[in-house]
Length: 205
Image 1 (tube, rainbow, N blue to C red):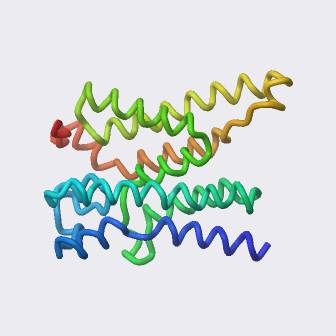
Image 2 (image 1 turned 30 degrees about the vertical axis):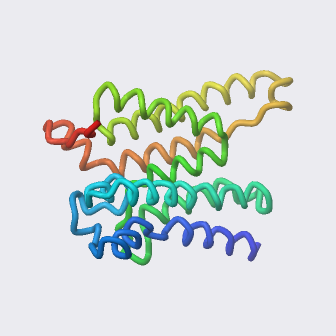
């Protein structure tokens, strides 16, 4: 019990590492919270004018969601979804930044990739397609996370109703994916308002 609680705390702390803030302070001597949207994620890091720092931030934010879940799958199977949830909450509400963190998209990608590589690729594919059509990063993230939930829910329903598939194929619990979708909607609430008012910034491709 104590080990499980400690690991869940580890998952939160892992998710709460503000890589965007650390990297921009170390390499460009700027506080990312005072630039652009004030977000600590890779998209805002890109606004400092260094795409390599944004890429590094993106990768690190993905891994801080991926690593706790992979460890949980291997050693703490009873805490997989709690570890995933707390890693996500750590990024969105980091204790080090007065609980004002990022939007959680990269960390979410790391989490679902650890749960299912196929869902990770589905998210990336959906994100790219929507971004190419509409050129809004926020809309792409919300739509892609919804797609992951819906597709997994459909797979889960089919598998649960087929005794043979139920014993040979595993899929993540759709309930946790729905919670992640709600969290992503929550963190993009300002973007939703901007989209409604046609003030949302487009991706520059």
